[in-house]
Length: 491
Image (cartoon, rainbow, N blue to C red; front, side, top):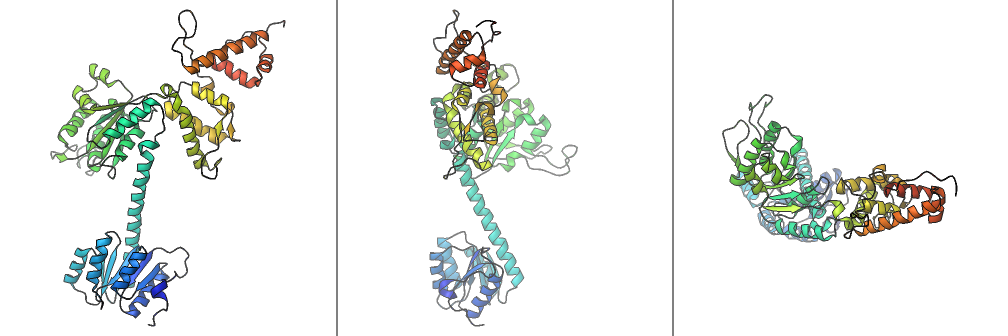
């Protein structure tokens, strides 16, 4: 076959496709072989570059990256084995298929030992060659996606990405950063919705185990027998329905991390087996007499007082002390209110991107709460913590019809949640250690009552005096626990 002019220096364009399936480099000293492979691969949608000898092939690899290299074994300037060895010194990942007319088992074994991915003899089977190229490129891309996913997870759960500027959160993140690289078990305590699993994932992502499995176990969602089988696996026939042996989470997560959410709900029998895994790094699958050894780091979380559970006999004391080597206590959102504006901004960005609305050119949200709505968020006690706040912001994004989100978009639960709590001493005056929010709320409450009394408890007239909408006044009355008297007959 005549050689296609220009393909040696400029590379060839894919026939019938603007989006090549992959980039392939053919290194072969025979022009008809190069042309034959080029035509075959182009018709399949690949971009093909050609090199007439090993030196030219290595130069190509310096200039570009490829999904597959097809390399001839016998070439005049340097053998395919030499080129293969040199490529592998620079690049251990790119698949290399050896092609030769001199096929033998010995040559194939030597090529594979040097790092070749496969071996084809001339004349090759086109269908088999294309099948192997497709399979190898798909495998390589899957591995690359996995690497990118792990990098993304590291970035997502990296400590700087956890939102919180309060002193307490900064101290927590500093502690978590110090212990991430250790092998120690960690107990993460905090109310529901404070972000315990997020901290656990960040610890794993910043540990030497970051490239291994992270498995989260919702301990309270399992009955005791099912939890034990889920964690340790079982052998065929171990119990009714065990029709085949099955690996447990500990075996699957070997060299990785297991996170036990709500560890306080685990039964005493399973607690004993967990203790053995922590101390001895071994366990027995359900129904088996064989011991399996594992290297798994355990992180645990609880919203209970485990010390009290120990005193009440609901939790093993020895397991408690093994888990509680390092204790990270996450404060509730009401104790770190200064983080609320940052969290709101973070969740606005997240949900505006998901809903593709109210984004600027840089991809950031332009939404904000009006001052009155933001004040309600700052004063709310957040029994559901960060998770509750996230739900409120997501709702606001979905319902927003303008860049400034008004009060009426907030859920009723925030407007009728019992109002602002203002602490007072026995004489009824504001407590000496009152927060800024309590001081502002107390002043606001006083001014509203004053305006209502001057207006003979006409809310319409009081709203005019205060220069606020009537709906806003009604919301403030509810929020500040103002008892509205019946409007006087006289003014």
